[in-house]
Image 1 (cartoon, rainbow, N blue to C red):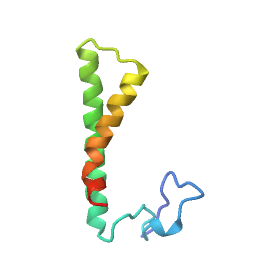
Image 2: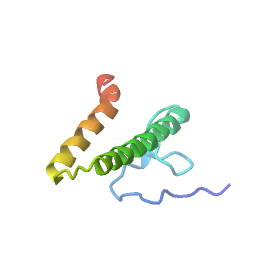
Image 3: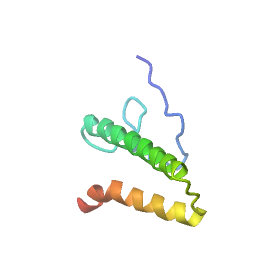
Length: 85
């Protein structure tokens, strides 16, 4: 089996965060890394739906309003991780 490098790998990234498959590894259990990836994909989809709803409701938020709403959304998503620290 040939190992592949991640599509984007900054030069200053610590080498130890990559597993033997070349993918970033953040948890001891590889299942947790996959689980977090699933949750992040779902969060991205939720944000897309949020923006679609704003458009459908006829709203055109200012860039500052959009950034504030995005920050609030991200804070809600990551609260459980921050509480555990």
